[in-house]
Length: 534
Image (cartoon, rainbow, N blue to C red; front, side):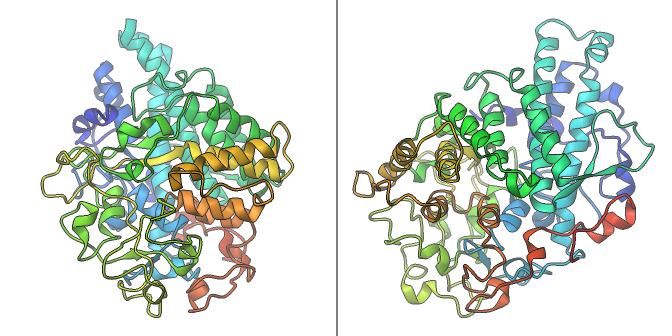
């Protein structure tokens, strides 16, 4: 059972938050006070569920009607974390292209966005809203506050333990800001409520802050695989540190390959296991594959209804074939380019079973994979990775199949294998290439069902690891960050269809390695500066 989300119905009402960020007019008003919300242990658990839920839901009234973030943003497409994160991490790359022409959405694959982009306004606001809520929780979860409210015993201990979880989720949201924007509005529980405007934190300083927070809570989080599904433990902190260190040179200017190996090894040694069936990792009962996940965002077709969580990943990738995706209708939107298709020798999945692409009347032949018209959904590689179908054949939660039960995996064991391999190849110490090859072959043996896809040490180069990351992790929110780390997102070294808005692909300005701070935020808060080139 997806434990944490069972408390979300209690949150279908405004939750208290206090911050000078309200001056940005992004949050809905409410008249609740901390004394009402945090009156007892149940209130704390409800807010904790809301904090986790901010990654899956968009507001307090189901899929629409009372969004967490206002400011004229569309709740379905511009308030939801998963959908916006996907747009930023996948649409600018070879792994995704969209047929729709809604507002500025075409600018993402064309790498043409500006500081006025409404989608960027949403993905800037969402992590800051989440962080604001977390800060309030931490202020109200101190020992003194719990004692004053008479919350003691097991209930009090549970709340104290949850503080490390909240700090992890804050670090994760700040990682999103650091990766996408290179800087962030910076607020913690130490900020005095309702006084000065928030300050700005640089990318290098934010890297240091995230690193220090994760290390501080490393021993405070529950041991690996001892907490209920949907919540974070030590494994999640180790996984985020490994990812942080893999990209340290981009984030801070200093490479930390050895540290990436150290924390990847911690995760690998934590008792996680590759699940035998790759496709089942992205189905409606993928919570049963938790042995491979360090952390997954829990989605439920009844309790976390939203148009921008994994419901989006199932609907938007399907058309007339929507039944294959387990949803009631298709949105005729997202596909991949030939750049992803070229990473697989067999698009039917007969050899590499990670090739989860439509095998019907369109979407996998060489002619149909090519995209002559971005707005024509029939053209391109149709991705059938996320499916609202249970592996055991049972019914999904929402009988209308409008909203899905597929959890979104944030960290999986194969990512740690591939971090280890890349960091070894880049000169990190504490690991070795034979072990890296073994880890890669573990991934490929699952993909092929045998050893036919195994590779040797001579095969495993940095380019090979990048391609293997595409094959294993496509549509999971990694590709933009990977291409930046390899110096390939904006340059002419690697082109894919419609990169830069040109059919054959073209280089773009280096400023597109990072997103601009939304203009409206800078007007509201003069402490925020703009990224170079915007």
